Image (tube, rainbow, N blue to C red; front, side):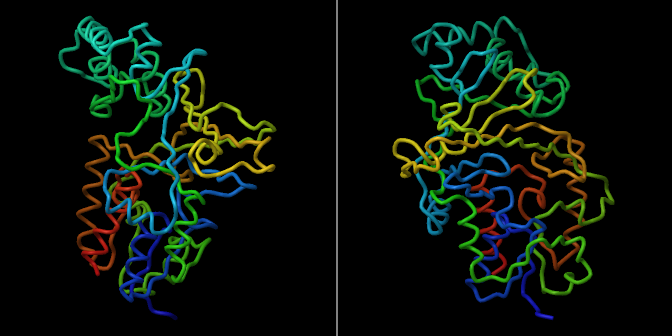
Length: 376
């Protein structure tokens, strides 16, 4: 049996970044993944010229130049700018909340007019101390924005009434008093021209890899194969749920190929009504084909498109965990697992599931790089 320095469980951004750095330092790594492909939830599948984000849309954004330079060594990024729109009862609104949104809602033109309108609604609501998410949101942006653009989407996403959700979920809501539809405030933003999968494939190019390999099904074989384990799966599952099950929200994706060159005119369209069962529709080609994005449409893509409807879903152990539920109850459970893990000198937990934390992609890479510096 080959002996490795590190067994890396999971080939997503965290696992692949650590394995790449370890390999550079001469460490021998084996990366395993239960899926038939690398890249975890950032996996993109090329379909005759359209890179389909199989596990939800991923838009890379960061203000950390070190991380931006790091990821650009593996691929070229286009200058895609995330400018989603929201649909509420047949009307379109720009996201995040900005002057275009306020003009559509109230007919206001100047920032001062918009500020006065929001302050009027906040004062009318009279929320002194927010006891739930609904009160917190109204105290931040007023009743109109909350009811049209926050309430339904949030209740679908979390599967609960906003009145039953803690106020801490929405600490702030982005309000921008300019006519700027760019969703992110970060310095750097884009989509890899050849898809995210190519990044991970380059990272793992010279590293031993086993796909369709579930750690828990091969635990006896794998537990002594390396000096240390980098584990990016669920920490509670690793410890056999001895302190209880950590909770998540899951997602379900409904994909459709259409005989049209342009279905919705935008990559991301949110549906904020509760009665519409999906939260958003992604039209994948708009991440890569458009002014300044660097790709020219071929005959294969001109008259076809691929869309994905994204449905929030109740999670159980048979479903993929997507969003951590970092309320007080789950945080206390996670802290018990974290303390327990300190006694295991041969395993390190990392990433979204290993650390029970919602991570943006740049933060995942930074966390893996910091671990690599400490370990190597």
